[in-house]
Amino acid sequence: MAIAVKLDDLLHDRRMTLTELADRIDITLANLSILKTGKARAIRFSTLEAICESLQCQPGDILRFESERATRPRPAAAKRAASR
Image 1: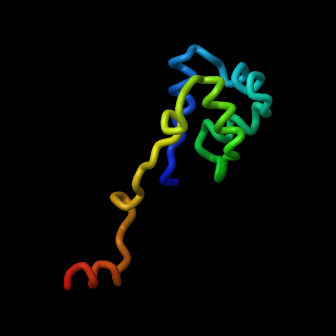
Image 2: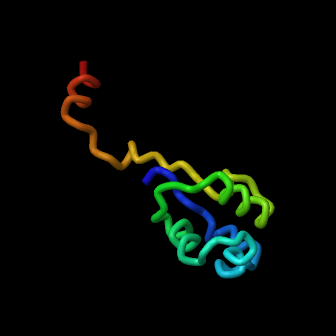
């Protein structure tokens, strides 16, 4: 996935456990764990807002874009078009 979740780093920096954050923002530990491990496919803005408020951070501190383009092989049609 092109979006990486850096929640673990923020929790470490703030010396907070995932359980403590889950209690603070009233979300299940299981759902927060799915987000932390990068297995989530979506996040509600209200959840993102609650995390940011609790950790005193910005959404960009939690989420990072990592291009898949550099690691993904190009299709043959794109290679032909690029060589013209």
